[in-house]
Image 1 (cartoon, rainbow, N blue to C red):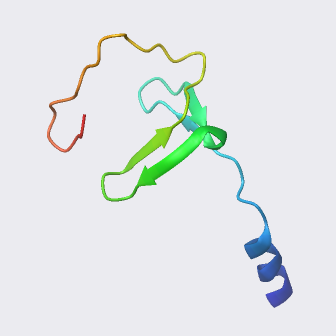
Image 2 (image 1 turned 135 degrees about the horizontal axis):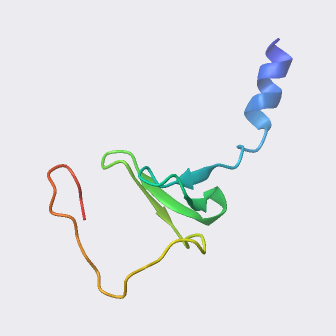
Length: 68
């Protein structure tokens, strides 16, 4: 059992896909992961999936508990 746990610890992490909480479409995956901030609960991706539309005008959220 200890040998199996050591193998899991040495294994590469499994890839993950990040999905929109609203429409459930994929927005990116761990191959584009740059960094994460546990305190704010944010993940920064290098690029987004082709299905993601980015507006040229930057809009920041003003909702309480959100950081832009």
